[in-house]
Amino acid sequence: MATKRGDGDPAVTGGHRPNASGLRRDVELLEAIADAESATGDGLGVLRLAQRVGRDKSQVSRALATLADAGIISRDEDTLTYRLGWRLYAMAARTSEAHLVRAATPHLRRLVGMVNETAHLCVRRGGGAVTLISEAPRHAFRGLGWEGIGVPLHLTSAGRVLVSEWDPETLHGWFSAQELAATPGGEGVYGYESLADEVDRIRRNGFAMVDEEFEAGLVGVSAPVRDFSGRIVAAVNISAPKARLGARLEGAGALTRQVALELSAELG
Image (cartoon, rainbow, N blue to C red; front, side):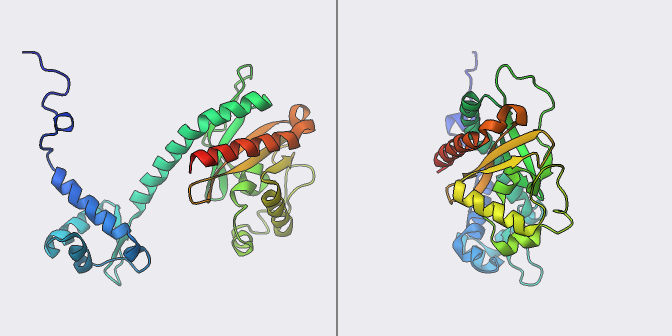
């Protein structure tokens, strides 16, 4: 007799899934480690976690050791308490970026239609702004793509937007005087004070503009994308030759701000 698609598959039929109970117990542990009691303190120890999930201390200890070995949680050797680990945060970051790209794509395409220039979605990684995705006009020549390429934060409109919610102390501590000493061309951000002034302008206007500061002959505008908590998680950017976009740069900035606000609203 022919087997129908899904026959015998526990995920489809609702039957018993091998190791499902173990996975469910691990998830309960992770939820206990992630909750407010752990987050506001120094993590939770084995005994407290066993109490929280209603399981034997030795079982919880073995499960925690396995999760710690995988980097899913981390153990403080001084307090013997557990917190969420680097690998879990890394997976969450990748998942968040994937969701961000899916949500942003139609908004970028609409912006391209309004400005008739290539639009980018950028995020901060370390000291650079990295492009996650680009959308170009249909007629545009597709040259070197910017996806995955990091550029200095202080020289680009996207980078400046991504640090525009930082307080003055954080901003000053992040950028060294040597890092800000030179820009490729034109008037630009040369030090902390001028960068701080630029951040103030971004907060007032809702977008940033650069004029040949990253590359001679290139101009750009960017606006912040915020998540459900109001935190800046990305920047929508338009970059183009000055001969094409320079005269309408401020108008492109207003359109970019509008699209970024709509994307932020979609993110909650």
